[in-house]
Image (cartoon, rainbow, N blue to C red):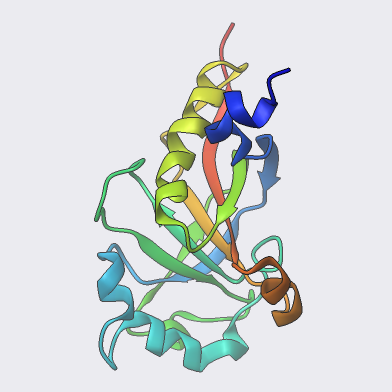
Length: 175
């Protein structure tokens, strides 16, 4: 008897794709930067942002911090790190950065290990293949999203890694 794990190992690394409806939200935006630029130096966006936790609220699934991307699986492509903000946050609160509206809608989603780059790179082709074989199609009008899920330390320690949700915007395919 052949074990399923022996015949479809790459697929077993991905749970089933789920479709979620993510509400739109307001967010302070880093602007489009290379990933390393977001975290490099004392004056980088991330260091600026983490000093302003009082401005933030949950965007969805417990996160305030979301990566936006307009390109699927392009190494070193610029991304936009956003932090969801309360309704009363003003442009002066966000200065020198801007507040943007992140458009909500339907997304095909899958989780992967946040610290596994190879697995992360496999995620988008797998999601796109699922979308292409479904009643949905890719919606290029909205950004791809990546959300790092930081459960409490005890859960993360038990898993041995942190979790990452990856989202591809979708819409119904015209029949």
